[in-house]
Image (cartoon, rainbow, N blue to C red; front, side):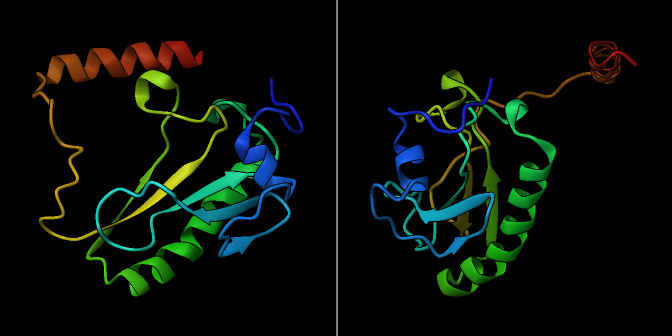
Length: 145
């Protein structure tokens, strides 16, 4: 369950302005900050973080999630311009096994250039169309449809 703020969470401390950060964008729902451990060599790797504490994406209320996506939409062209990126990744790691280092839901905006060495496409596999159909069916069932 989402908490207003967690006393131990570094992102909550940023949201409460207990610690100063480089924040190029902020509104009532969220703030954006420059990642202190960016992927790749381009400038502009930005985190978009809800002010209220949520551990994972499924806990985020719809209004906040909408605000996050709209903020990302505003930030992407600016980040692409200042970084001279050829593309952008939008990533949300959900859970430790998926790479979530801080258990406060957040989104990464990562500027990309051809040959930048950042790899997300490794360990991929081809699947049979029947597996696609069966997986889609199982997800629909899990959604209650």
